[in-house]
Each structure stands twice: as C-alpha cells, then as structure tokens.
Amino acid sequence: MRHMSSMLIVVFSITSVSARGPVAAENGKTVTLPRSGYAIEVLDPGPAKAVAFDSFKMFLPPQGGFASNIDVQHQPYRGTLSDYAAPSVAAIQQANLTIGNARVENGAYMAEATGKVAGIDIELHFYFKAIKSGDNVILATATIPSSRWDTEKARLLPIVDSLVAVNK
Image 1 (cartoon, rainbow, N blue to C red):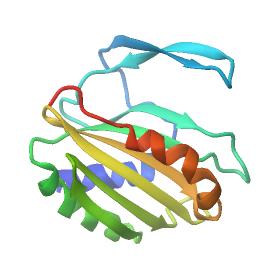
Image 2 (image 1 turned 180 degrees about the vertical axis):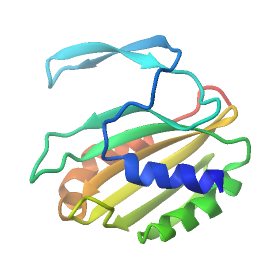
Image 3 (image 1 turned 90 degrees about the vertical axis):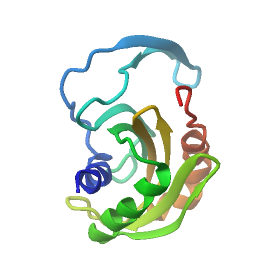
Image 4 (image 1 turned 90 degrees about the horizontal axis):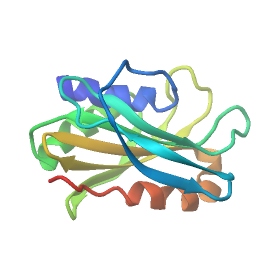
C-alpha cells in the first residue's frame, strides 16, 4: 500500500513545484546550460530514508498554460524492480490513466501512461523509467500534453532514458 501511495504521489505531483521539506544534502556537479546561458551546481540530496521526495525538476517553456517537464523522485523501496512494477501499474490504473508498454528490461522498469489528472484540463502523456539505487527506486518521469507529444518527446525522452544507477 505504501508503494501504491508513492506511485500516486508521483503521478499527481509531477506538475507541482512544491518543496517536500528540508533534506540533508551535498552539492553535486555543475550543469552547464548553454542555450539558456548559465551554469549551476546541482544539489545531491542523497537517498530517501522514510518518505519519497522530488530531487530534480526540469521544465520546457510553458505553452497553453502547461510546461512539459521531467521530474526525478527518490522512493524508499527495498524490493526488486519486478516487485515494484505490479503495484505501480495498479496505482496508475487506479488514477484512471491508461498504461502501456510497461516492462522491466536492462535493469530498469519503464512504461508510458496517458490520461487526465485532477486539476489539469488537458490529457497528458507520461513516460517514465525507474531504477534501483541501494534501497531506493529512482523514478524519472517526462510529462507532456498529449497534443504536443509528437513534437516534444524527442527532446525529453532521451533525458529520462539517460537515468542510470551509480550506486547499485
């Protein structure tokens, strides 16, 4: 049940920018964004201990009131990715989203989902990849309005696909 709640949090929090409270952290590498004209050091929050939290969010410029985005979430989870998959699918279906192309391969759980979420009046397309890192699942999710999926997926999906574990 705790895992299903975490998955629902992911589905419904990917469009929010709210903080989840203070997290002890060390700084990571500097990321340079030449198209945007700046560089910034990213925060490395460490693993989730008791509750899931968002660690990283990236947005494209908004269009029509919605900014396509990528969200990275840390979820405490000791089981395998195969164990993680079934309740994730159930939670997504419980949220009245249609899930497709769900699979565990090459050390990652990947899937897509489409549908409307509470408070947003457009259909969204979600693409996500989950990996294990120690006793955590790290979940990267791209969220794009379905009407812009074909034009924006080439920009966001490779970023989600680049997620890899460095602490197994």
